[in-house]
Length: 187
Image (cartoon, rainbow, N blue to C red; front, side):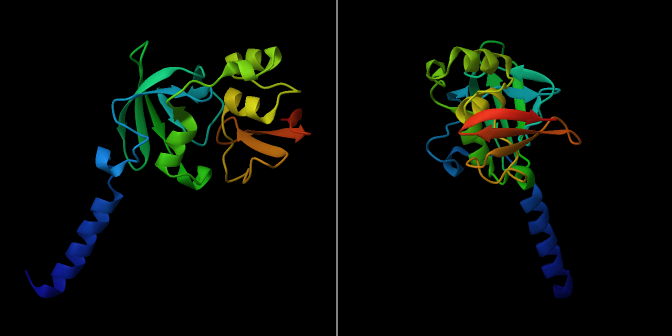
């Protein structure tokens, strides 16, 4: 092959390899994330067709907070977990342009080795956490456990008193806080 074609072909091949979403090896993961280990959902995770998008759309079915899962696989863009009780698999797709999170950061928001201590929340907060809903008077931490993190593209900082969530690609709602508690929901 002529030299003039080797470099462009090599560059093209490297580009193709870089764009592949290959499974990460255990040696490529932080020590806190172990393939095959068990973790607990840190908020109510919504999904459709067995896929959760990290943009955190608020439609579809849900997996309750503290659901135990095993980590089956992690790639540069996805996380595959299996619910311990049901055996159902859930694929999580990280949309980094919306979340500003790497796949590792997304994993750390979604899962932890220990359960969320629900006793820290009021009776009202626990009821809505169990339903995956929010209501006036809930504290910020309770809102996070009930409906998860808002996309960072529209809510840059959780210290803000205005968090924008997406019900779908086209529908949003805004949660307004006053004094650290949910004051109103703007549809």
